[in-house]
Amino acid sequence: QLPLAESGGGLVQPGGSLRLSCSASGYHLDYYAIGWFRQAPGKEREAVLCISSEKESTDDVDSVKRRFTISRGNAKDTVHLQINSLEPEDSGVYYCAAELTRRLCQEIPQTDYDYWGQGTQVTVSS
Image (cartoon, rainbow, N blue to C red):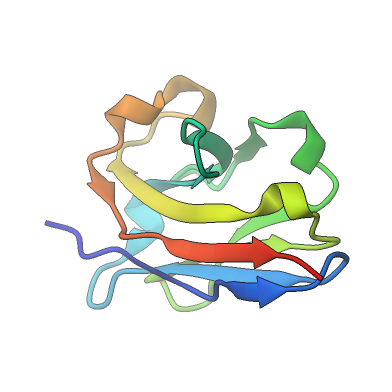
């Protein structure tokens, strides 16, 4: 089992920024593809960004291309999701997921991720 945990969510005003973190204490995430997903109330969970074990990243939601960035932390047990210029439509629960694979992000469907965190709530409101 990989004990993933998200942190960094909260209430933020439109236009603000957040940095979400996905960590697995005691584990090196470098060997895992890490995906960030979000789920708004009443909607299906959607992919946001992914970073593969080969450190390539891709985005799955066109509207986030210029505002979301995924990166691996200096500590090998963390992956960050930086979100800038937050919009109310970005509100929801953000999850990170991990898959032990060398596949590129576009080759990994959501259903293939074996490990999921509990999620962190992001609320964008004035």
